[in-house]
Amino acid sequence: MSRIGRKPIIIPEGVEVGVNGSIVNVKGKLGELSFEYLSLISIEINDNVIQVARKDNEKASRELHGLTRALIQNMINGVSEGYKKDLELNGVGFTADASKAPYLILNLGFSHPIYFSIPDGIKITTAKPTQISIEGIDKQQVGEVAAKIRSFRKPEPYKGKGVKYANETIRRKAGKSVGAVG
Image (cartoon, rainbow, N blue to C red):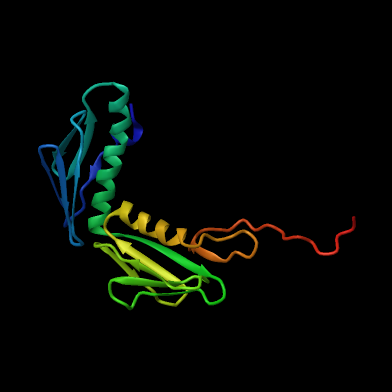
């Protein structure tokens, strides 16, 4: 049996969870999220505890058991605390500007700036021109936006220039050695 799926989910104060048919609605101080689960999974809410169970022991049910529980836990964490990812820009002249309302303007060494449209539900701030902070209630959406911004200029291994996560370490390579003995 799934170890993650068996773990009960504790509902914190200020968060409302409702199951309507095959849709789980989670409402908290930061917003509201919903998720549609398959009929192979059953969800029970008793007091302030959610228990996720599977109806049979088929392979598909086992796969969805832990996934469904994790998605519900992520929704509860999102509406109560929110999610945040930090990015850093390394390189001469690499800057980010989030002051232009629906766009994040990135200068990443190309001949033109990149105008990234900020999706609904995501808040992007730039404390410094080389730091980007992405916040939101949907864990998947925050990670997707961070990965998309990073993909514009991934960090390269020789000088470390590019967009990287704040906690990411770049594996550096030695360049060509000049005047090597041959």
